[in-house]
Amino acid sequence: MGMYLPQLRSDKDPDAPDFAEYHYNDQSDYEALKSGLAAIVGCNHEQGTATLWGTGVLLGSAAEMHIATATHVLTGIANSLYGPIPTNPIFGDNDRIRQEMGRLTKLIKQRNIKAVVQPFEYGPTYTFDVVGFAGGEEMGTDCTLLQCAIPKDVLSKINFNTLMMDDDPVAVGEPVLMAGFIKPMEFSDEQDATIAINNLANAAIFRKNLVVRASRIVEITDNPGWVKPGALHMRLSMPSIHGMSGGAVIRLRTLDGRPIRNGDNVMSTTVGIISRKGNGTDREGNSVEHTWATPMNVLTSVIGFIKYIIITYQDIRLFRAQHPRSFRSSDSRMGVDFVKVLTHKRDRLKREEKRNAKLKVEEGPQLGELQ
Image 1 (cartoon, helix red, strand yellow):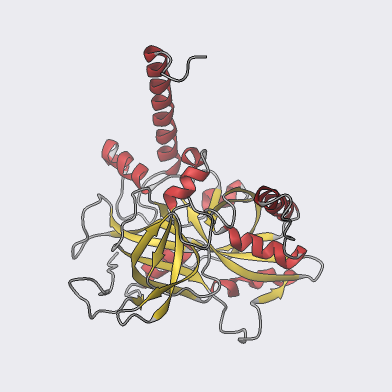
Image 2 (cartoon, rainbow, N blue to C red):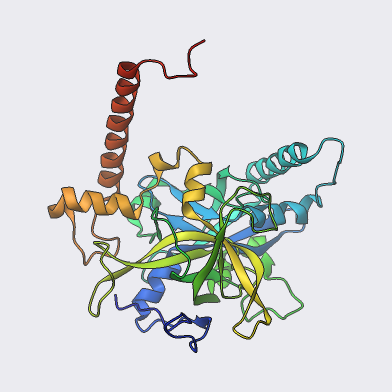
């Protein structure tokens, strides 16, 4: 895959643009990225309508489909159906969070959220119900993991691409891509991207307008100003468009972690989830629109069990190093059996937990643990 980032502004190249639209030279690279993203749709059963609300990222999984997105995409659907949560200064923030989680649970139970996905290499479009979620609140980490209801025979036979989760920390100055679905051209500026629920066979329209942009990370902070302090976020020097929320912040990598050189096979990994618009300054000091995103290691910290169900880029590298004969670099899913990788990962985690438990017993109680 010959994917390369465009020239972007840096200390060495101060005249380069802060961001650029990203265009794929190879159509198969573009289709692979598109297949790794889901259109997140909110359904109003009373009105019989389905509306595009945001984007999700298909993460590596062996037995189920898990999709990461921004929590505010889901709360937006809830607000459209139930109205905004009324403020209550008496009960405060904890009460708002409980109400937010309760409303999202109601959305899931009533099948108000659907994910529109498409297999790799021009397969048909599928619309799946979202049946589970776990994650952080909108005004905190703003990231959520969704679980979709998919027949096992569909998941085993069809090659849904994944944008592998990448646990390596992000850095200021690092070049990245961001990708998400926006309103298709078929809808006017005044219209929402809405179709009839009984017309979900045509839900592919929600996936028609994919925007991919490139920029650098210009700030990493746990106090971005628009959420409660404490949750890590990163600011990208490129504007996002409505619908891209929940989409992927992407790092281009080689399979063995080396810097990219001409002729290398390059893969896309997910290092963040697009959150919302922010403000920055250009080289002349003028105010410009930037984008905030949540790093993937924040999702890992919020959802403790995620390490048992999601395969990361680091897991693939470790598996490849230990089982080189199981790896075929030409394969569209990186040439490995995801079930084998996940089994290998779970066995390793169990060994680590047993070892840590044994060490704790051998060391005895620590200072401050004695009653």
